[in-house]
Each structure stands twice: as structure tokens, then as C-alpha cells.
Picture (cartoon, rainbow, N blue to C red):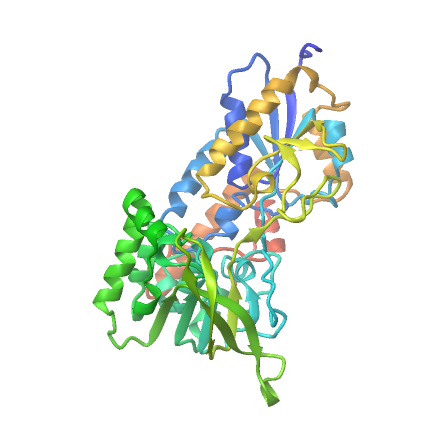
Length: 471
């Protein structure tokens, strides 16, 4: 066991979303007998990861989480380096040179695969890709083909409900959020009338939460449509609905909506379907060849344990677009092992494992790239705590950086022409977006707190002090 040298432990965290920020925060607060110096890297010019680019803009809980993350970063004891892409701008070898330990919290941003025919048709979309578009992700196209009148959303998690709500909600009702201008214009021109959300199991097995469910009822001029035949409960469902308060709340809410028959003659309808499994995305004929023309679903039935089995009864729904929202999947990180099935970096309680199955000294994982894309954002704190616990146990042997000087990393990035951004730069961008909101409020129909800047180059210019007008 080597003793700590007379300098801070240098830690690099890759990914400045909730997992990365929580990991940094917990280490700064942990009981320890050594100093720490933490650099938090992100491939995007702005921090917050999933909160900025993966959660619907009309979510009421966003502001609270952002405020908590802002408070951590604004203390000044964690250095933010944005606009730095791991694997291209900076490598694992570079990090080993300048840091004693590295935590990967790169999250999961791509869609999980849905293995049915027709997913490659025009009009078949990944839910995560749509989320990236409406959240103004800097690396996705500015346009989205919103031409369908009838749309299917496959999935019964929070992302599926976000996608369905954003598709069915009137664009003007989103102006009070930080929705980018191009997204507003795209949704404004959408001809959509019906959104169908399909879940494979019953109302007692849904994966969304009461908050997301209740938000559906807040959309103006959107009727909720439910179907009596979907409200089937087996013994396991009845037990879950009586023993689990969250499930009880959701089943009660859905059942009340079913009884109330909310048919107000609204211009748009949001249909909730249960006990239906996708079989095939159907292709059109003639001029519609190569495009989505429908979705074939198989009726399922509960088997007594809360699971389902097929009935052999099929229904074709005439839709012109299908959004696959069955979950996220992590991406491979250059230089590290990868579990393709789970979409994670192989690890033991956060210690990254090598090809031989043994922990690689100084390498750790936290968040979804560690455990898979499950659980709510709040669960990330406990996950980060476990990873930090491992790092603290290992710390006597971690002082390995050959060039730990804090300035050396900045010199390296500058020598490579990397226009990295800082926390001070984010504050400038944040102030700029708020000013755009104030400007839009003075000329528009509603008060807007913020208008999000979308283009990566403009985000970087503003963050680095070269302000330009955002059209």
C-alpha cells in the first residue's frame, strides 16, 4: 500500500449529467484524509446531460433537479470542461497521463432495438431520437418529419409517455417551456389527430410513474381514450394494486379515466392501449411503398403471475408513423470493455473490469453506463455513492498520474485546437438563453423563461465570449 503523496488526488469524470455531477459532489463531501481535484468532462458545450437533452421540456420536476446540479457546480470546487469528446479530442491514454482515477458516467442515449419487421420503414422512428430533436440536441437535424395524422408509440415507460404527450400537445401550449424555436414551428405545423400508446402488459404492470401519468390529463384540447377490454387483472395484478401504493394510484387513475369517458370533442385524441404486443410495422402500397402504413398488434392475456402470453388474435391499426420507445441502450466507450447485450461497461460495483475479469486499477463507472438505463434520476445518487465507496477503498494505490498539474490538461486541449467550454461559459450561455426568453416574452403571446440555443457552434461561441444573435 502506497501512501498519498503531498498533492490532491486528480480525478476525471467523463459525462456531466446527473450521474457525473452526483459522483463529483459525493467525493467532495466524503470523509477522507486527502485532497481531491476534479475535472468534469462532457462532449457537449453545456452541462446536465439527460436533464437538458433527454427530458421533455414541460416536465415540472426539471427545474428542481437543474437547481440542485447548478448548486453543486457553482461552488467552484469542480471544474467543468465542455465540448470535449472522449475518444477523439482526448483519449484514455491522455487521461491516464493527467489523472489518478477516471469515472465514466456517459449514460445511454440511443434507442433499444425492437426486433420486428418494418422498423426500417420511412416513418419508423426511435423515441430517443425524437426526444433529442425536441430537446434541441446539438448533434441531430433541425427538422423532423411531422406529417402523420395517426401515430403509434410503442412502450409503457416514462419516455413513451413523454413522446406521446409532446406529439399530441398543441405547440402553443409548449411556448411557456424552453422549447427551441425550430421545434415549436415543427410541432405547430403537425397535422396529427390521434396518438396511440401501446403497452405489452396490463395497467398494473406499467413502467411509468404517477407524475408522468397525471401530466397526460393536463393537455388542452386533447381527449384521453381508454378501452374496457384492456382492463384485465390477474391474481398478481390484484396483489400489486393493493400492496404497492404507486401501482394502486396508477390503476386508480386509469380506471377513473376509463369510467369518466373523457370525450369532449377535442381536436386531438391520446389513446392508451394495454395487453398488446407489436408484431409488425406494416408497409404501404403504391406511392406509399417503403413507408409506414400501419401497425399489427397481437392481443395478450395475463397468465396469473403478472406476465403475459399471446392469444393469436391480431389487430391492424392504420397509422402513418411509429415511435419505438421501449428503452435506452448504452454505447461502447473507446478503449474499454462493453457488454453489448446490456449496453454497459462490465464492472463490479463500479470498478471497471478488464478482459480477464479483474478490476482495472483507477477506472470506474457510474450511472446508466454502469447499471443499464433503469431507475429514475434520483436513483443515480445511490449508484454514485457505491462507486465512490469503491474509489475510496482503492485510493492508497491510485496516485499514478505522471503529469497531474491542472493547467497541463488545458494546455493539451489548446494544443489540439479544442474549443472547450467552462462553467463560467455555461453561466454566460444560461444568461443568454434567459435573455432570449425575455425578448420572446416581450413580443410574443406568452411569457417565456428561456429559449434554448441549439447549434453547437453558437453554444460554443457564446460560452467562450463571442456572442451572436440567435435567430
